[in-house]
Image (tube, rainbow, N blue to C red):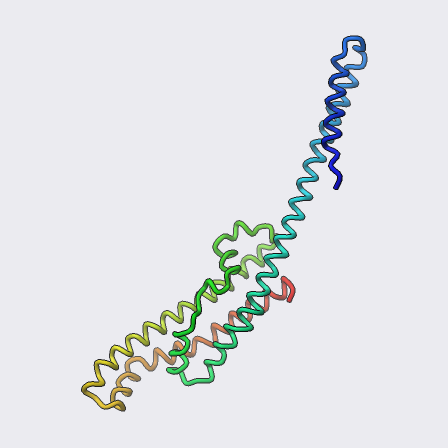
Length: 214
């Protein structure tokens, strides 16, 4: 967009100088009026130019955020995390939660989701409150999964402490029975919650992809 604001401003200044000329008093009102009009046009042109630049910047930012979200869903989640966690469901509960606890799963793994969720006021340029809300929800679902991992860690730590305490006085078979009676139901419950949380994340992420383009 050609910037005419500087030209209009210069013309406006020239007209003001003409209006101040002593030999042509009849020109002064006309020159002042034209100067004011040109000054107004120059300011409006500047405003429109800045608005157009902001619109281009917002569109570029939106394109970048959408690409980052797509990559985190398709490459990081679907391509790595989801496949690994889904594979755990093939194992029996204790083995599955032991491996789940050892995974390097953090809320920071989906950095763009975290950034939008913790600073959503900075992402109003997306111009889609519903999308922002769904991104925040998706991030919270991942945080729930991380919390489940922490819960499993606590159960396994308590189970191990009890195992170490009992194995010196009981047989391995009796020890396992005591451990199952104490922690088996909680471990099976945690294992049962895992596929539900994965399903919820998959559904939310699929909805987000549908909005930003796969």
